[in-house]
Length: 179
Image 1 (cartoon, rainbow, N blue to C red):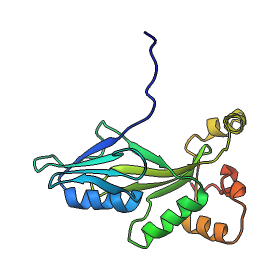
Image 2: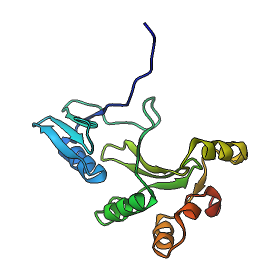
Image 3: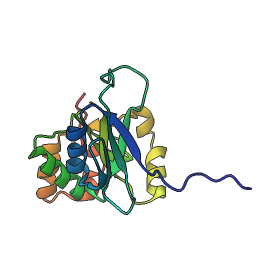
């Protein structure tokens, strides 16, 4: 027998005391549809997988506390910068705003917190090929600043609408250092 890695990440299960709020938040943020729901469990998907997110409602949980061990965040990749920007605009119109927007170099990302405080990264890949990504890493820019450069999502949306080329907006050095 030959050992092989998994072929995909199938799903994530979230425990919560805010069952209704959490399942509705993930439906809205990920454009997910329920494939199964009852009073305590919701299987949600946005693609061909039978469920990508499961929300499990439980009454006797401790509230999440910052500074404890666990998963830092979960990331979802959008098809392109236009889709990421459109999702930002949609969510903003419903009172959901990112708390951190940053061009990491390999990705451009917007970070959100769900009703339980779990961190969700919505991102795009900035390079079309592995070779382009390798060339970026070879510049040393990532070594010098692995986090990346923050950006204002309103400026991103405005520049995108104003015709600034997507390839320019995906470049990390397009964004001035803000910290």
